[in-house]
Length: 371
Image 1 (cartoon, rainbow, N blue to C red):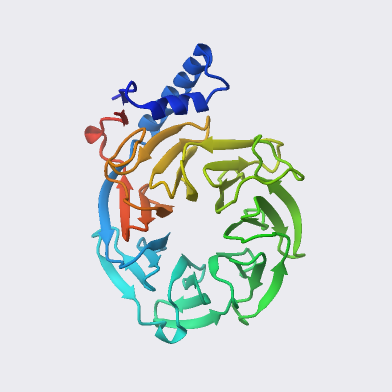
Image 2 (cartoon, rainbow, N blue to C red):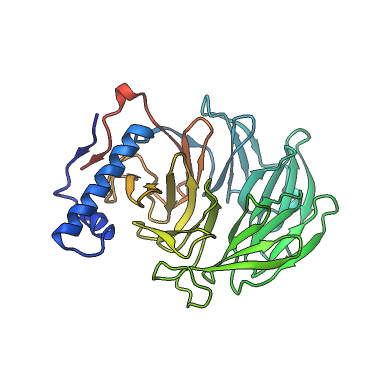
């Protein structure tokens, strides 16, 4: 069934249309309307609009990060100093690990991820912890000094790269527990990064730069600036803090800024900019077949077409304005997103909850509604 559209009482929709064209002239407005409708139709046909399936509760404070485990379960970490392991079949918390680290003085967790050898890596206020889920023991604790460690990623050579409240990126050996390398170049906090498919490391910073590193030599090989004119520049003044980044399946780099998503191709001289969020973006995740999801402080989850940069669905609560209003969204900042292998989207929030979104059976789908 084609999407139902009721646009006359939504000024935000008009803002989307005007944002997709170069001026407010009738011709450009019609062109923007056509592009938006085409994106909505593609999304409704190929992905199906997402609806809330269930809400997972249990954390006592903000849920900061999510990861899908190789066995199909979901792992979450929180500022309540716990890590929970959830069954996505039943929706129940099967394991809560809050006693492992009492001797480590861990007060809050910022991220959690699964290593290639099956161990769990967590980051927090006191550094990096390496856990065994089999023995329920912390096998290694890498101290970050005075820095809060925000993220950690596995490099192609098996080492670990950590991103923190400092200006430097640390490269660790999990065999010795020693910091083997410092990557210097950023001038402000480095909250996120990604191990690239070509073996290099990309990082983003509050200084507005994305840097691409050769991890063998420790040298920065590329610098991308978040500039307001939508062009890649090595010398322009930075205008946006960069909070989170990923590499897309086509090799491009996507970074979340204060209110927009910037997507760079290392081969071209231009970038794609996705605008629509009204506050800081905390996370972006690639879905499939040219679709992207983003979320942040404005409490909305937005689904984008990477083909033309159109927003095709917004999931948020009834209190806010939205393009496609779900009414089931989070009531506070949405901190993280993960796209599961079974094609469900999971979100975590400062409202202490985790929400699982899915595409319902086609017989139940009525399409995206602009109300």
